[in-house]
Image (cartoon, one colour):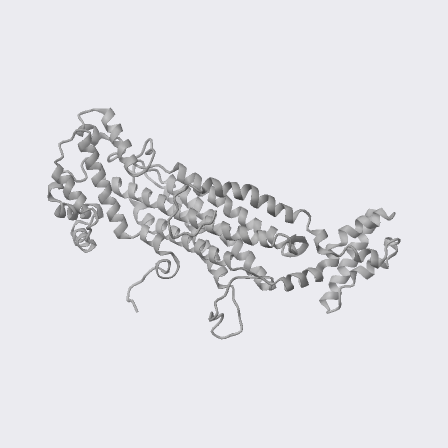
Length: 477
């Protein structure tokens, strides 16, 4: 057992691809690629950088020794300088030109944006996988009547598939927000120490065009169509704040889904998947706890809380830069992404394996069906010559009385009570019984499911199909 702390997001929850994106090795490799791209572009634009320097940099771009970096940082107390020293040891011809004109944010901020772009793509793929699973579930159960609740009290009927479209709609909005964020995300680029590009202007002898071209070329080298128009030493932390808003949105959708599933599992209607040897409780061996849904909700709460953290960071930056964001972002950004990744892996797993106990669903509908039918009966009573307001009061009084009787263990005899009441003269129990088919009370729910799946959902999946998605994400579009 390890004697040092490891984040559960790394040891238990997040996927290997997301962990790799935020790893020290991956980050160090990005820093070296940024330095190489800067030097190559500076040489192309006229700076006298020897080919040997670039050759040595290319040869060692993936040869980072993190232990050697730590040894440098122990004395220098500066992580970027530690990496520069180590890279210079491996590529001595490049030492005079490494980090030329740059500030630490050139590598730290640009690498953060690269990582976040790839992490957003990974989350988009996972979001689409969740949507795909929910789409199939909603289609399969589009016409199965079930109790709908308001205030967690039986209200009217809906269908199991229609309820699933409510979850799917939330994740659809998240996927669209991810797509929009990816389309907007800029590069920091080559902006210099306080964002004025003064050092680069000096290097190119006052040539503004070359400084602008340097900025554009380095951004393009990493697949960004543009860099931020202006910056201080760092890119505005509003970008991080907006990204955390999107992640929080995913967490909110997942928490809503997870909470609903926990309620439905309590009712015995819809259950999360369970493995053959899965243990529900160390004491109560019979239990089947909704542990996946509970984990989704727990991780979601963490991500939602991180959203406000990013807001505070954006709000407290001083002038062109302050360093109090550094330690916070080292924690908040990767942990939020890892947690969101874990959430979506879980939601896809759960949605793909949901178990609907149709017998329980039908039994619960039948128990409440007389209450569900009262609005239709009221309309029939009016058609038979009754007064609507009088009928409404009779339904209210008799429904309350029956609810109390049911609480005492007595059967639901609402239909018989209404059929025998003077206010409903002209209607008999047999006539009312004809109105007890649950499919008469789900409205347009089955049609709404198909219209939603074959309309907005299909359109969104088609529009998002061309976004680069990591290979490990199973997305059927």
